[in-house]
Image: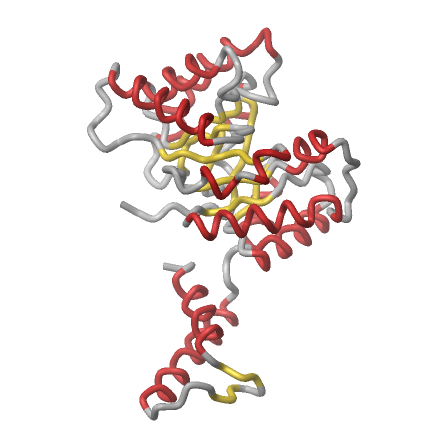
Length: 288
């Protein structure tokens, strides 16, 4: 199986067919049909039915992005029906918002298992799970549940700040701790972390700045809410040719030094030791 890339994760409301039809055009790594925040309560059933149709359509072409659905929270009346429907439809990943505890995760696994037992889906073809970390408790307890079967997680800054009773600013100072902690928890649990939404879709500079910050923190990609953000995310989380070339030269010099029994060397004016070699390996692994 080809490893999943999470650099650009593009959302669209499942009940807006014109937007859904365009999801793949910007070539994101993952497309997400949203049944949660982007869909008003009276339209939940309509959105679920539309998502079932779109899962097949979007995932059909060769080389198509991973198709995911963001279901409603485990604490809503729509959750079980959402999971049952998208599992039966063969969705590639289920995005679950506002997870907060081991109990939430147990309910998620129970719902996925129950849905799988009533379908003809091939054995072992269970969908990937993506955790939404969007509340104060969800951030604080992230390490307690992220290792329990998740492929990725995202940090939802807007909901987090609302839950904290704070104010959202363009500086992101109010989410500095939580944003870093989610990246840390994800790394410890072996999960890919996805960075915050940039709500101002016209501000490409802000998106690029936030993506660069996220990459430095260890995030693997960024949530996108407009097709024009996809290329910006892809660029931020893909090493440049110069970075790849330097990583190769670092590792060649490092291997030669190790062969001589040397554990630290000067390379192009910089000290190179094992942590630097590890970063170089990470650069090369991200282009495989």
